[in-house]
Amino acid sequence: MAKLYGDPGRVAEEAVRAELEKALRELEEARRTALSMLEDKREKLLVKAEEKAIEAHERVMEKLRSERAKRELKLRTALAEEKSRHLDKVIEAVVERIKAAKAGAEWYERYMRRVMEAVAAEAEAHGGFVVSVAAEDMDLARDIAKRLKGVEVSKEPASIIGGVIARSKDGYVTLDYTLDYLLKEAEPRLRSIASKILFS
Image 1 (cartoon, rainbow, N blue to C red):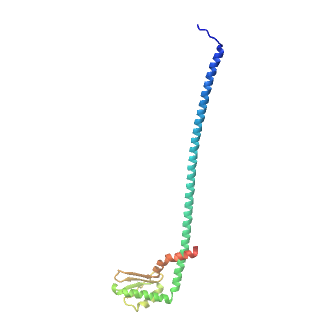
Image 2: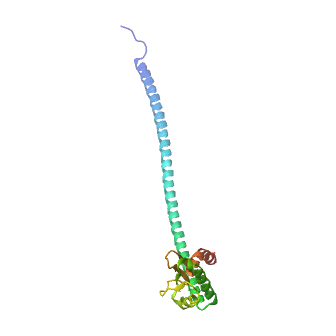
Image 3: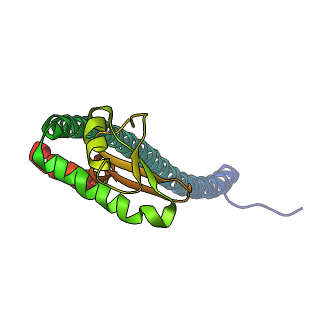
């Protein structure tokens, strides 16, 4: 049997201390690794949270932009409708003024004479024309038609502001010399002028 020298307790203590130090080193290494992993995980979570926050912010901002655009469109539409109503009233006022101004006016009698003469110039080629006029223009139209060949006045008045609608007896030609047509052609320009005066 071998003989042992030295203090066995001390040897045991050295061995335990060495194992303990090794265990502590391993534990410290494990702690550092765990902290590093936690830090990485925390960074990743922070990045993910930041990305989600940015996405949520973008969604909210997009919704706000969309709502603002809807409100602005609604407001512009309402404003355009209101302007259009005012311009419609202007056109109605113009029509009323024309109706009032044409009654017995020399300019209007000249206009009626000229357009009915233009109709008469086409009468022979189309077998004559029947002209329709507003109820208040019937007497004037009959008086002018008496002196023209190939033009007769319809017994039924037309629902127009003024002027003449002429239909050929052969049914192929309709001539529109109404004030309504002239006004319709001029309406965009009239609306533009009224809009500048009213809304500028």
